[in-house]
Image (cartoon, rainbow, N blue to C red):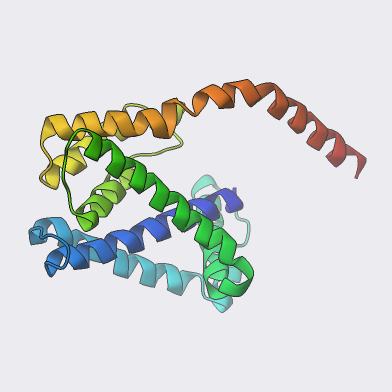
Length: 211
């Protein structure tokens, strides 16, 4: 649970910082321009990161992340432990460079896929606005929902792009194309590999029983 939460926090950290940078660029007109009601909410990232930094300090994280009884207390302890893992990853970039870089490259590639889908339907949007729309759509959905958030992601991204000035038809078609290549087509090889995954899971279980 703590490792899963840590991975999720790492993803949200990368996306939140990206949204903050994109908002700054848009606010000052360095890459397109958007009204303050669109860009200023990204400032919430700053106090959230400050609180996370405070909670995960070495002298505090050990005490707050001790296993506790009760669902909410246990979730809080696991969350602090997961956030502390992210802090450790970022504090030692020499040791964990590939993990952080891999997360950033993944989302950069995913945003590039969304851009390609929009360009296919002749939709134009500044790079900073695209990053902000993508992060807003991602943060408003849960990718771990059943079927990978199918339907929720499409709706959230479409309305996020609509808020950035992309026409509804262009936004919807671009998101549908993006999701086809981002989510639906990869399901085909994934289904083909399911028997291999089952065999790998059984091998891991046998290995754990023998150790």
